[in-house]
Length: 186
Length: 168
Image (cartoon, rainbow over all chains, first blue to last red; front, side, top):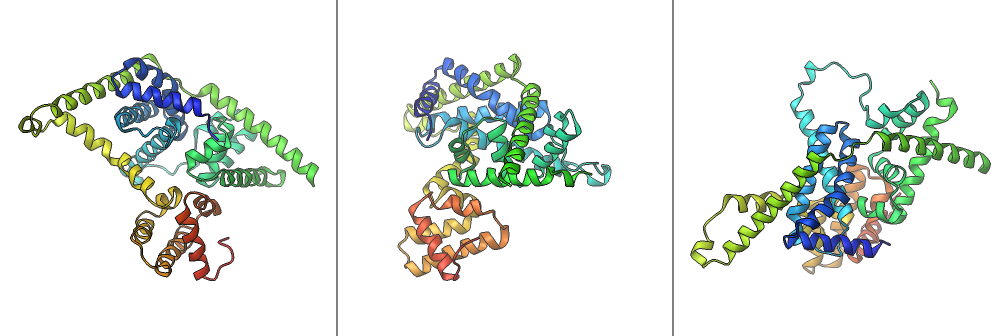
């Protein structure tokens, strides 16, 4: 299912870091910090906040190193969940800190990074349709098409079976096709 | 119909590829300052671990003294990460994560040797609770099935109690 040699190599790096090897920390940083940063940016839409979250996620990895149980989860999988949770915490805090009476009603309640990237109306519609998908369908689709993750890898990250991932992807695609069908223009 | 679907699939794939390419071009990459901060954190954690190990090697009376740095590391790390052990020790990853205390009760019943009918009832409540209150998508249940033997047995029994042929 997984590339075991890669997973073992990652676990070995983490074990070396736990033993005090700072070169291992650098190797792990090079490998995983970009992933965490991109994931956080995608969710939060702010580069500055994404940097803070990515740093915090890596800090959790350093703290986890000594008790890491090799073979149970891949670091990328673990880091994905940690980053996701940190982003959710941030979003909750944002909501808690905002006085809704002081803020004008946004034109689109779910503007996302993807939508801002759309260079044409069609692409913006696609982005909006992706953002409107149920969370797990959207996560699966983004991991598959934007991160290039394999189905087993997505299954590990979303804590479900490969069959469930296939089902999520199929339903996400059906929904997108429905949302983007010509007769839905307007 | 099939041709139409294939065309739609191709169009969708093409659009997704283009959006993904745009995202990849715009996504931030870690700058030198961020990398330096992350590595500094790594160094600090190593230093704290070394200090903790040194303290543990001291005679008992000295080792009992508290160290705010060490305690801080353990305390913060124990939060969300502490949940991993609980989940791993539970019945199944997906179920335990989503249903929390209810699944934990079911797990305790099972682990404690409760009667099969009682365990099935608890599990039935879990399934009913999930489908009734949170309205999960089907993958939540399918995800749980291969996760652990206990869950397979319990979920089936729970459904049987409700007289359901299929959870969907």
